[in-house]
Image (tube, rainbow, N blue to C red):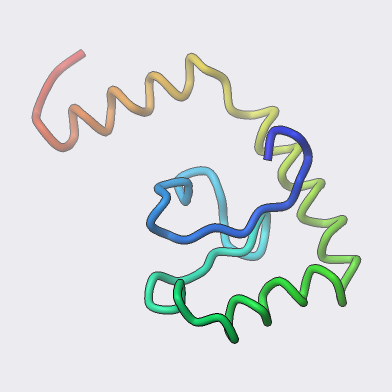
Length: 88
């Protein structure tokens, strides 16, 4: 993503906090992650619909500009606090 490349990923990766399916990337649903026909359909949409690629690249760059290391660290501490009751 940081290289300006479009991505396809599974929900199991944990990246969905940054990514919205169909906006910055295509998300392979957990129950479909081993379904080659479904994954092939998703990948073909990259090839057949170039306007989607351009929209996604713009959205990816916008997302990247809004995410900093500091913001990411604050978000991680908040997740820890929410799950374990820690205070930072």
